[in-house]
Image (cartoon, rainbow, N blue to C red; front, top):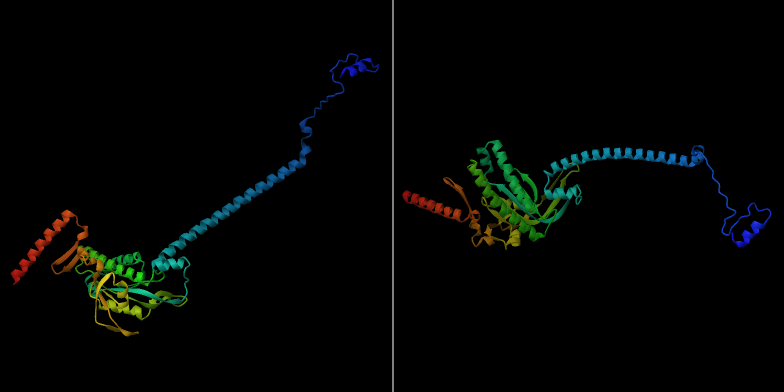
Length: 359
């Protein structure tokens, strides 16, 4: 209150108070209401009902999620078991297919239908010389183990060089380059040639191991290589088919193998023309083959061109009556090389003495 208000109220006859002072507050009331909470807790009944409803829906949703999680978990376990079964089946089926053919089928690049294509391939055919006589000297168990070891090693080399191991025909091996993947006709032919050289080298090493196991006359293989157009693909019926090649050029590879010397390689002229910068070869007498009108001039491989400086003599292998020699010069250190030279000189002296005594 200011001074005018104080003077008025203090002088007014109806004023309940006559001692107002400047600054007093007049006209404010304060009320205190005391009510128990229990009496009004249900004033929020609709809000509480909403909360209850939301809680019920949340619990139902959680239950549904757990049920779905259990169902999905069960499906995942069943799917995992099915995948394991299919993987095991696929792994077993892969044993009956070449790795490259297996990959194209299971990756979806090629469909499993009866269909063929006309392609230019480099075809390799090898056969073991005198396999029948070898089988007569060995027990079936020994022969099986020996043949499987040979085929395993040769297949490993073929796959490493990018070849398609098409089939085994007893002790014979059919490999081709250019399908299902190709690096070009010339590169395919060169890869096949390198594969053949590596197979020869590995077979020499295997023969040494087999002789140390008591096998008197291990394997010697003839090899034939031809390049030409053939039909390649799935042959057969909708229920049973075979992925292979057919054509006169495939038969020519087999024929070239048959005229090769034991341990030798024979090429057709077209293959030789593609790899002539890699090999030393000499022409043989022309041959004729059913399905090919022209005479075919085979070329017998004498070695690699990069062996001309002596690399071909780095591995020496020779066997016969009273003779069992295997020498890998590259594996010799200085001490072993000195010892090998001394042994060879002693052997040469003994052979000369034998010859002089015989004359």
